[in-house]
Image 1: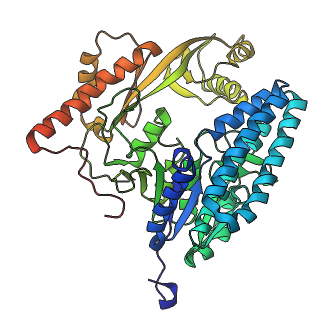
Image 2: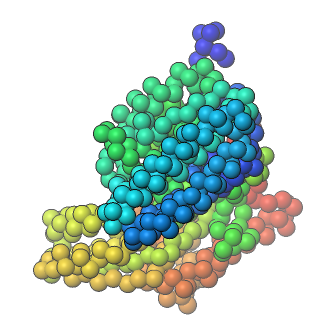
Image 3: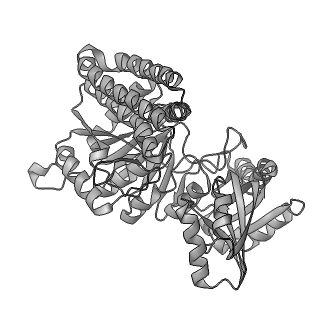
Length: 482
């Protein structure tokens, strides 16, 4: 119903398109067709960088920092040619005349930035944010031009003017009040007028206008931030898989199936441990506002996807299994009793070195922590000398089973232990929420462990259900507009 009748207009739907959903002109045109289907629902578009662009920009920055400026510039020229070709294919001649100088300006700034990095001899976090954020700025302009070419009333929004963050470069945190105010000011009225905002994901800026980023994969987070600010009816994450699956089908479990629905908490646990389909922080803003999140496949837009809500209808005990490789377990053994003030001091040292920590276990005299970077560990050990001894083991993996009903099924733990009785487990953890069971193992054992657990908790269920009903247990929920 329209505002003209005095009724409240429908709240918008925020649609985030990932890099593989915008990888070339054909993918962008496919995204435009999906957006056209959502026009009655007031779409707001969040764009990731084109596939692989972020990695290529990072590589160019590292090359420049080594003093190889010409090589870095050659890589940048390749990226420029790719974006210009996509622009020619999707924008049409009239829109390209507007788009071309915008692309030129972006790539000139990137060229100057590479020169500054080469002069400094270092890719600082601040330089990195300026460099990597350009991918989303350019891709969002391409999507905007493609929408205009399709005859849609779209307008480009500079996310750096709306997503206001602290100065924690490469892992910035939004300043919520200011961010909400700016997003509402920039978009609320145009959305009601059925105009389509398009902004880049992943990027923001400090109150002083210094570019920041929200962490790798942060476009999901942007979508959730925007959705919460605009009180969206739903948030859609468009990727290249049919939703959240029971395991990684490409590298581990080809028999993995779609999960029809899961809770916000289950999705957050999966993302935090390592599921690549969602950014770890992306669920929180949506959960606070109780906004459904859908994970959908841009290559199969009629697919049902996965719905993430407060109270899912799926009765499955276990939802999915995921693995995080490249993990290091750090054992910190205090020279005296581990009093709260000493624990805080230890954590402060890690935080000063920009470490995000997982606490695996604690006792009166020791802590076991999980990290994914090791470069600063020698410096941390030296800084803690006299307070604690720091040792670490590399090449570990964290395997995690996630399901809301694990807490009500105590026999699950015994099933797991029986199945893994011959496996050398470094550590077994169950979080306070009891939504997950995690195992720390040598990295070389992780793939076999995932396959074994998937057969135990998922494949046997698939087989039983198919034998009795002739259908699949993971295909019962409707799609996002059913």
